[in-house]
Image: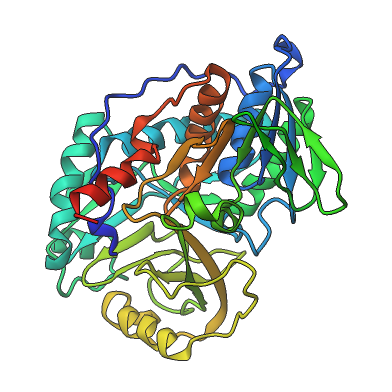
Length: 412
């Protein structure tokens, strides 16, 4: 399913959060609630931190390390942007951006790089743009509409052949993905959270509740509530519930060496960009840490999360070069510096999952990032924490029951 077909779900009512501090939870009263969170990626890490800040006794269990290359939250960078067809996600990005800015101030990190994001539209991308522009305006997100001539004048590195228009978000940009996961992990420990290394599985369910999370050595971690936010491993752990609605796809990301002459292709000269055509290509300009990043957002082949095959698909590399010859002409014959294997944990509609397990009232399932989840980690973490502590779902748009409604509507 292509990105322009995604996120056409419910237009939710406005979400309004107060901007709470990210300080350590020692200043918050202990509410006595014991919560286990499984998975230290963008969803699990921020959930654990927000729960600790709310006074819960949190244990975070991670199989690898925060931002590990096998995880969906691994790698160097992720795009953060407001452009969506659903205002719910626009508001969530607005909230997440505020929390990332605050994290940079309080943790003395530079996780957010607000170099702007440029969305370019070919005729095939008209539907996404026509729905996305009103969503930006509704939430009040600063943006500019640019024609091909204006694009070429501002960024002469970009070839405008085939483009109809563009939207530029000056406050958006990219996030340091692995560093963000590590920073949240460290903040949780400062907030009194406990971290455990291991591959957790659900323990015994009894009387409609999960009693523990089980570790490989046979030991168990007991708690009042459990949150499993372990990305592509969710369908394996909860096959009956999530197997039919989650599929993991392989997505290849390439890094090319920018040219040394002519207009530059670094983050000092270009914004983050996305090109909506028959395929959705996107990328992040180069810097001292990596080359010019190019990725195809079209859903890749299904893959198992433990698959360690990292072989480069040379035919797909050539597709990337063909795209660059048109859109970034000076990059057309650039040398390939490296490639990375990324995993998308996809739902059929591209929306997230945040809901109780149907057989355990204290077990929450969180996932389905669908290739756009990382940026939402701070906001979604707040929604999960609120759901757990209040004992009720904070955002109905992410309920599992929607898949039953969709199946009924499709006559399945």
